[in-house]
Image 1 (tube, rainbow, N blue to C red):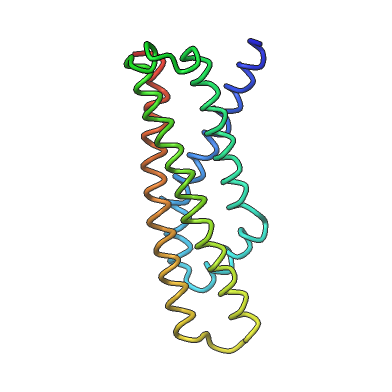
Image 2: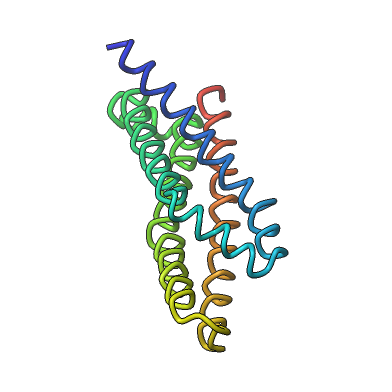
Length: 170
């Protein structure tokens, strides 16, 4: 059983690092660069979406949260009130809640918006010629929403990383 627990812990840490790193990179460097590139940046986003990057990050996020739930369940003695009310239990619970909220924002906010942007961009490419003003307005609105949501997810993941790092040691 100890081997399984350690395997899940390694999975949680590695996937969590990838998830947080991806979000921090997107929020601080990638999204601003794509926006600065203008229409060419949209092409890069389309390629990333086709290659499944956004879906992969969401799967990694889900695995991170589910493995974290299991780890807290084991570490806390099946969510015993004594542990859950301790400083460690509270910190780890705050981190887990931040991770769950971040996944929900990804699933119900960024993923649908990214898919809608992909459909609009594909329709614009099929039409050819200059894009319709309403299509550009929709893309801009959706892009701005995704950029904001990724920043919110980044803050939530920062909370999760800090609380997970401190939780077992207080």
